[in-house]
Structure formats: structure tokens, C-alpha cells
Length: 56
Image (cartoon, rainbow, N blue to C red; front, side):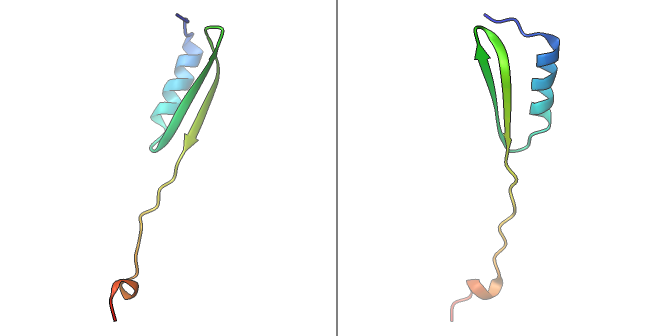
């Protein structure tokens, strides 16, 4: 089992705190964290025009 130092733990926790939608990928090589990738999604509320929704 890999030991995680405070610096890497802090980076991971900050990435998790600041993401609303998305994913966090932690890459490990030889038992050590070597990379953290954060993918964040921005979601927009779907607005439909009332004219498009009305049947003629």
C-alpha cells in the first residue's frame, strides 16, 4: 500500500472541493501518485421556447 504525503493529499482534497460535476483520476505508478487529472463539466439549464412546444 502506498503512503500519500501531505502535499498530494492537499491537492486531491482541493480538486474534490472545487468540482461540482466531473471526475478526478489519480494515476499511480510503482505505488506512488504520479498524476492527478480533473475533468469538470459545465451544465446549462435547458430552456425551451414556448412557441416551439405548442402544437399547431
